[in-house]
Amino acid sequence: MTDKEMNEIEETGSEMERRMKKRRFCWFVLLLLIMLLIFSFSAQSGEASSEMSSRAEKLLALLKIDWLITPDTVRGIGVSVRKWAHIYVYMALGITACMWIGTWFFSVWKRMGLAALLCCIYSASDEFHQSFVPGRCGTVRDMLYDGVGWAAGIMLVIAAGMIRSYFWKIRRK
Image 1 (spheres, rainbow, N blue to C red):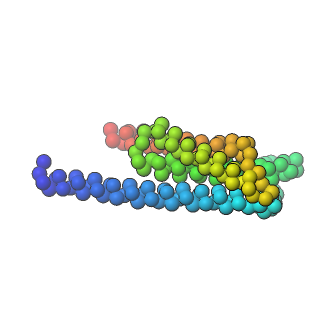
Image 2 (image 1 turned 30 degrees about the vertical axis):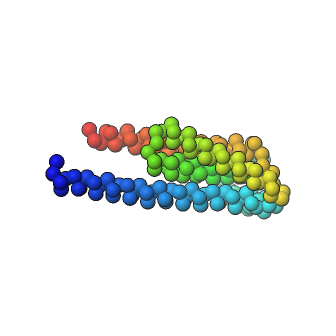
Image 3 (image 1 turned 60 degrees about the vertical axis):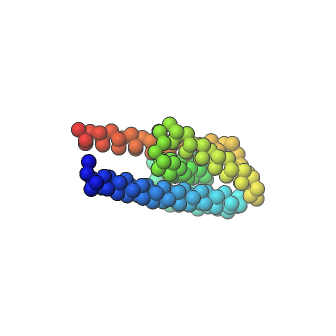
């Protein structure tokens, strides 16, 4: 190998390292923003949280999707909105945690485990935080909804990576 070829390989490696550091930083910032969003939702009083849920209820009632929302289900929408909010926001947390941890090129199992650990700890700390907010309480049931969300997010990232890898291998043949 010539010196010129060696320099090109070194430049390519350092360029890839710079791009990975940028990705790592972006995923970390996004992860922190989602954590701040969750914290702000948890910091709302019970009254403010109920008001937000009732606004979502009214919006769904305005949509008048008769085949989806019957008068019997409208009463349960407030509870349902809250639970689905837990699931979706923690799904976003699981996705960003898995993507951020993935910038260190860990194995799939280690990546899943570390992302799950991070999300689980954050979920527990969020429920603990809620126990100090007036009109709110931290519950294990909410942690289970959180767990469904972050586990689904982690699995989506892993599945997308496996599909991408499969098609990458086919393309290279």
